[in-house]
Structures are given as structure tokens and as C-alpha cells.
Image (cartoon, rainbow, N blue to C red; front, side, top):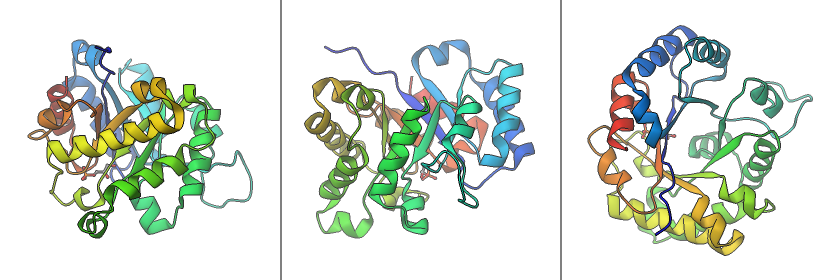
Length: 258
Ligand code: 13P
């Protein structure tokens, strides 16, 4: 049997925690996690842009072992794009991961599959790992379109990258109806959809890419449901929103995922 992919538990703070709150949260998280936790699970935190430098400085000086990531970036390196952040700036902060194509960016800010694909390529070009999100709405699930929606997002988002790049990617399957609602996909449903993600990666980029890509589940992951979700064969971690704001809850999710 292939060696298990190391799970990645990521905390997406969305538009929560100013830089003072961010500092307190990562200090507490670092205190809550022990070296042996990191041996089996990779952990990343994704604060708002204004917190990144503060958190990065604290992580370096206190040798915190989780990785730092962003929630979003532009695909261009520089230019007249008021309010946007360049992947070059994020790479300078030694960020490991950048989330792209989150459903909130797609639904609220009009990001298209093509935009997401440009971001995936830009993030890879600058030596960081994309966490590319996909997922269906409630109406799409009811209409039996969940798999085709996710399949289309994966094919478009991962177009034009190499098989080797695809093998190193993280894809987060986040059903929109489960985000921030307290409703979680059952472990079986989450597994089924994460297997769809892996199948599509295999079809586009081959078996090695499919074996390497890490597929996270996201949508109301909590300390109480993390272990069941993480025990599924095709679920390699979690993208956690609300529960990642609290360092105790987030640490419990990490420990439950080991
Ligand atoms: P919740 O964990 O708050 O449902 O958020 C999930 C999410 O969108 C993480 O990116």
C-alpha cells in the first residue's frame, strides 16, 4: 500500500483577528502543539494580510513549527491593481501556502475558474503551494450536480500545470452549504467527493499526481468531527474556518487528525 500522504490542517481565519489578536492566537497555538504532533501532521495558519508580517516575525523568533499562508493573491507580479497583493510579496514573507478560489472569493467577488487557474500558476511560479478550493452549493447538490461542478472546477483550475506540480498541490473540497453553517458533510459523502477530486487529477495529470495531491475537506470541521473525517482514505487534511480562530479548538483538531 502506498505511504499515507502527510495530512495538512489549515486554519483560514478569513476577515477575523487584527494583528494583536493574531499574535496572541499563534502564541497560544504554538504552546498547545508538541513536537510529536508536527511529526505526523503539517499545520498552516492563514491570517489576514495585515497580520502576516507580525505573525511571521513571531514565528521566526520563537521557532514556531506551523507554516504561514495567505488567503488570496493576485496573479500579476506588480502593476496598477489597487488593493491587490502580489505573489512576489507573499514569497518574500516565506509563505508556504496561498489559498485560492475560495468559494467566498468566487461567490462574493466574482472570481472565475480562469482567474483561479492564473493564481494557481502564479503561486507555483513563486515557490509556494496553492490550496485550491472547490465545492458545490446546496442547490447544485440537490440537483445532482455536485460532482460535475467540482470536476469542472478542478479541470479548469489545474489546466496547464505539470504533473509534478499537480503532485505537490493541495485541493480543498469545501461544500458551500457546509461553510460556517454548522452542517458538515458526512464522512462518507466527504470521502466520495474527495475521491472525485483525486480521480479528476488522475485523468488530467496521471496516477503519480493523483497519489501525491493532498485533498482537504472543509466545512464546519470541529474538534468533535475531525477524527471521523480525517480517517477517510481520500481525505488528507482539513481547511478549517471558524474553529481555527480559537487556538484550543484548532489544536484539538490537529491532534484529532494525527
Ligand atoms: P468553517 O469551518 O467556518 O465552516 O469554514 C470553512 C472554510 O471556508 C475554510 O476555508
